[in-house]
Amino acid sequence: MKKNKIPIPISAEVFRCLQCYNAPCQDVCPTHIPIPRFIGMIRSGNIFGAAEEIKSANSLANICGKICPEEIYCQAVCTRGKIDKPILIRELHDFATKFEADKGFRKPVIPDCLAKKPAVAIIGAGSAGVSCAYELLKLGVSADLYDILEKPGGIPAHLIPQWRIGAKNLARDIDFLLSYISKPKILSKALSIAKLKTKYKAIFLATGLWLDRMLEINGEKMPDVYHGIDYLALSRSNPGSFSHYSQVVVIGGGNVSLDVATTAKKLGAEDVTLTYRRSPRELKTWKAEKKAAEEAGIQFVFQLQPIAILGIDNGVKALLCQRTKMLNKLDKSQRRIAVPDKTTRVEIPADAVIVSIGQDSSVQLDLPIKQNSIGGVEVDENFTTNVPGIFAGGDLVRGEGTVVQAVADGQNAAHAIAEFLKNKK
Ligand code: SF4
Image (cartoon, rainbow, N blue to C red; front, side, top):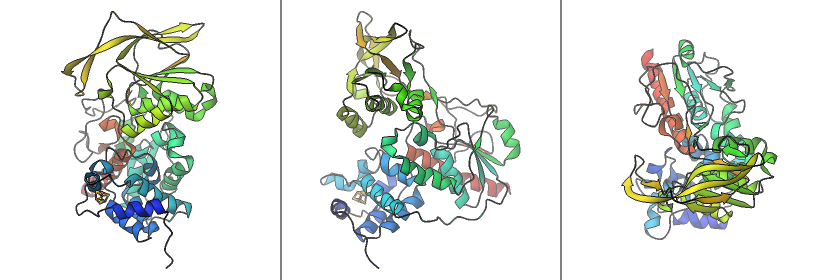
């Protein structure tokens, strides 16, 4: 058989891998992709085999190949990093899955169970929900997917900027999986978990966190003031509506706020400033994302507490802040507490302000499902809530997380649900 030709830098990279026994990279990956195995396959020219290995472990393999934060997972623990530098694992993953996708998809082998009455309702057609439905299908269980949005795909389809994922990769994962699962049903009325429970044997809640947190300061409801999730969704569906802004100030200190800031820059703003109330030490962003934002020209200003958004002529004029002091005391999130110095005033000129300080769940639970300390849903190690037959996973359980973690939750919850259904019989 003719060997597939491997580009030179990729071939150099695969030969740097030590093929560790008990590979820490694989262990730390939420979906446990067999990393040394797929790297070994690329080495021998079996790139289709490498892609199959990745896809069998991770149902959103094309998306994760583009956006997975390798610096907190596989590459953070790569043994090769102790010698010189870690293997570029995400790049190798991306190379293999892209190679396979460019040559055409291979059909997965799944049981023909769509004819059976769906036993499970999955609420939320995002990374966790779609992955759960697909894994259930592989286990011979059919599920109905529900979502409030017409377009499925959750955060990758609606919020993560398109230049990071690429429309092709979305289709390669979401559309591909949905061609095996049935199309999501649209929830036109408020979700009633109690009602769904009478129709299905099990429910998986994967609704994520879509409600922007408010800063609760004067001027927050003015025109030209946006909130992170709404802004990212609008910038995907109607990018032209933001092209007239030239000075944008983003408030926040997480990865979502970096996406917001780089989006504002890409949409044409000359100056984009990201303000954070704590110091750089407390910033929750990933290094690679921050570096990319700095390279895109985003300015970072630290230790500023916003106190009002100032307006002029029915629009935004500036963000008014107070400087903060960092205490040597930690809060619940284990970060130093920032205390505003009320004697100070800093005005940052702006014609648009975007508040991106975190998200909460917008789902109203009409069953007594126990909530966790972060306002999400509490589950045990089997993704089971306190109400028998109701499971949950993804951001709704963990708070803001990664796509790969949501995929892992969806896939693992599918196994727990299949086991539950088996025992119920
Ligand atoms: Fe290869 Fe690094 Fe994984 Fe070891 S830890 S198998 S060197 S990628």
